[in-house]
Amino acid sequence: MPSKPTFDELIATCQRSAVHLEMRDAYDVDYETGPFADWRAGHRLNLDDRESWWRPWLDLITETVSRGVTIKRARIVSEPVSEYIRYEHSGTFTNVAAGELVRWLPRRKASDLALPGNDFWLFDEKWVHWNHFNGNGEWTGEEITDDPAAAKLCASSFDAVWDRATPHDQYKIQ
Image (cartoon, rainbow, N blue to C red):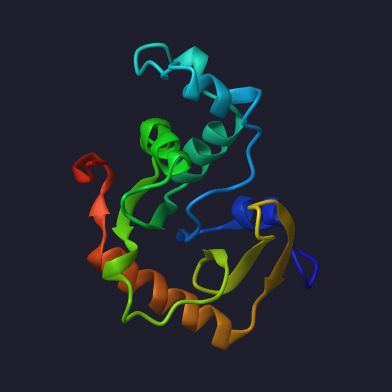
């Protein structure tokens, strides 16, 4: 593996754990077309119609979990939640079906936690994959590091969020 592996290489070689912390209330989506627009028009994914929602990402998660890797996703959200978070919540059963463990933490319960400034993935408590976004939620790039201090911060932050967060099947959107 090169000194700075890609995200695809990190998930492909991950051996124990991959954790993902999301802290934005909206990510760039096209309000006029695509899945978010369909959801806004009333379309909901059907648990029994797997073919309509299964996609390459979920295949990757299933394959990774089948290798014995634990994948956890935690989302810190403002309440009342944004329309985008309602959309995310309604489709999160697909992540769970693929093998991800997902929890939600209201932002007001995270006030006393030390959190990094950006969303991240942490692979095997060593490699951090930062995701950078602009103010409109548009992805502007990534940064990958194996800096021990960054990995330690991300691991402790994620664990603190995870311990307080509510499992997906118990988190109710008002």
